[in-house]
Length: 144
Length: 68
Image (cartoon, rainbow over all chains, first blue to last red; front, side, top):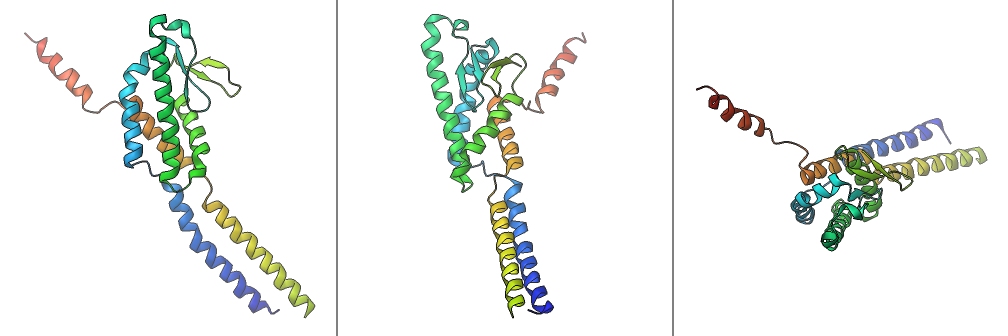
């Protein structure tokens, strides 16, 4: 095989790589989060937040390491309100699961759901207010 | 002839490896973009970004009220 043939092949490889790199850059730029499904879930979570906020603040409810919310201290909730709080937690988690699934789907990669969930898990905790509770990597509750 | 075949085979393998690498990178999870998207949604759900019109609205009525 001649040197010129080898350099032609290498040139072709370089061309293919150059053609693929902009696609990679475009894919990195932004994730699609503006779809009717995602906006609907976001609005539902936004509407629930005024009820969730005091539960986070009192430590009754905490942020889990898998991007959900969970009852952390049931004693912080009066007995007659516990069923309502549990229902609120279930609704919030249903929305959160749907949100992660829909973002993965909207971007054409349903297999990203787990990665999106763990990204959100980290960001919910990073942006939580001081005094709120969250689960660390080992699953133990910690106060921010 | 034998040497040419080996070089051709090596180049072919290198090309295959490079191209499969490209494809893998291309569908790799975009962690930075996901973090940005998560922050945007969290801001909206928790309303952590205060509306820019609110501070002037709060201070404007307070100033004239104390004058007389």
